[in-house]
Structures are given as structure tokens and as C-alpha cells.
Length: 312
Image (cartoon, rainbow, N blue to C red; front, top):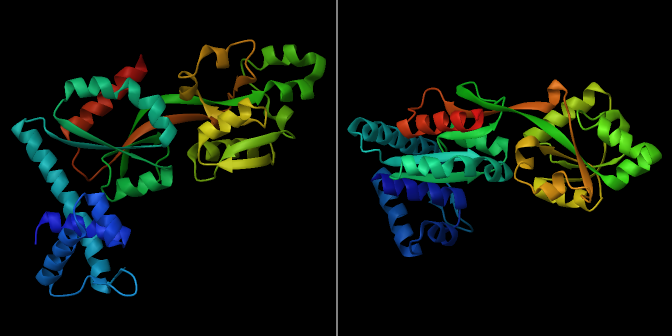
């Protein structure tokens, strides 16, 4: 039995399909079956029931939990020894939401790569629930997302505060305010009044998303039940639909800086971007890591670089 056996076993347990697991591992099905057989021989028990479909036995289920801990401990001690030897080699596993990565990582990763050319960087993308579970079980070293991170054993470092913006199609503005539209547009440049839009159609992220959670808490303060006509996990889809006039959506401030001036400030833009200034709509972007898990020099340097870049 070796660590490769355990890793291949975990991938097979996740897929519960030899064909998919072998493809994911870039090995043949025969080679994968051999690794599983070696592990079953070592433990003198079956780890999978193979008919009618692949399923974990009770022993296999128990080994999944242990194998994940063993591989996580191996990654930690390897990182620590690499740091002791000052080889600056190793692996940094980052977790971030799909769209947050596009706004956050281009400002960090190129510079980090120059400083740490021997560090292998892997990126896991998903919603906050998925990423927090991965952080808990050692699937990622650092989680980049909104506070709070709902784990008792997590340590967080604040990177920046970020407002939410309402993205309002101009035709909705005109239907609400008519001849006062330009006056109200100027007034809302500093902060929008959400009650003016409470009867408008909304396009929102699904409830698992932290941005949606913040916005729901904000609406609750005003006893507003929004007219939600569409929910999705893809914030870029919501923006595209709002640009077509379908409804109002919510967009984080960091994402706006990557948009063209034509969309955010152009007079012919089909939407307006209005900030929300309520404390409920100001989120804190943090980097989280597990307190009891070894934090490599590379991870510490990544956090320090993020603080430096966004402080500017």
C-alpha cells in the first residue's frame, strides 16, 4: 500500500465509475483496477461492491475518511519540509468562486508566479458551501471569499471592503421616474434607494451565493419581497440579461472595475450602476485558512501580496 493507491482509491470513490475515474487520472482502467486490488489485498477486504454498479462497502466508506486525512497530513508535512529545506517548491491550492477569480486573480497571480516560479498552483472554483467543505477537508489551502466563513476552526485575513451595486436597466428607470429620470439618476449616483425599485423585476443569484445572502438581509430590513423572475449561479448571465433590459440585478464593486467604461459610464449604456451604502450591502473579502493546518511560506506570501495589492 502507498499514497498513490490511496489517492486513486479516493478518486474512484468520488466517481463510483472506473471509466470516469481512469480518465480523470489519465491512466488505463486496467491500471486503476490493479491499484484498487492492491489496496484491497493490503486491507484484506473488499472496498467496492461491483454489481450492479460500483458502490462503496462499509469498509470502503471508512477508508475514504481516513485516506483523506492521511493525504492531507502528507501534503502538510511535505509543505513544511520544503519550507525547512528552503527549496521553495511545493503546491498552493486556492479556492474561489467562478466570477470572483476573474476579478481577483489577475492582480495577484502573475506577480506571485514571478516570486515563486517553483510553486505549483491549482485552482478550485465553486460556491461558498462547496469551497468551505473543501477547506475543511484539506482540498484547498486558502479560500478567497466573503466573510463570514462558516467554520469554527478557520482563521481569516481581511483583504478589502466591497460595496454591492444595483444594475438597473435604463428603461426601468424611465418607467418608474418618467420626466424625473435624469434627476433621480444623478441622486442615486451616491447611493440608491431600494424602495423605489421594490415592484421591479429582479434577476438574482441562487440562495447558496454569499452576495445573494447579503442582498436578502438588506431587503429584509425594508420588508421588501422582491419580484424575482430568474435565479442562477452565474452572475455574468444575470448581467447580460440586465443589459438587455430584462430586470434589475446586483453586481459586486470589484467586478465593475474590469468592465469597459462604455458600460459603466457611457451615456449610451443600457443600464445604470448605483451603489448601495447600507452596512448590509458592504461585504468584507477575506482569505481563510484552517487554524490547525500547517500554512506554507508560499501561502503566507500569497496572503501578504493580496493585502499589499488591494491596499493600493
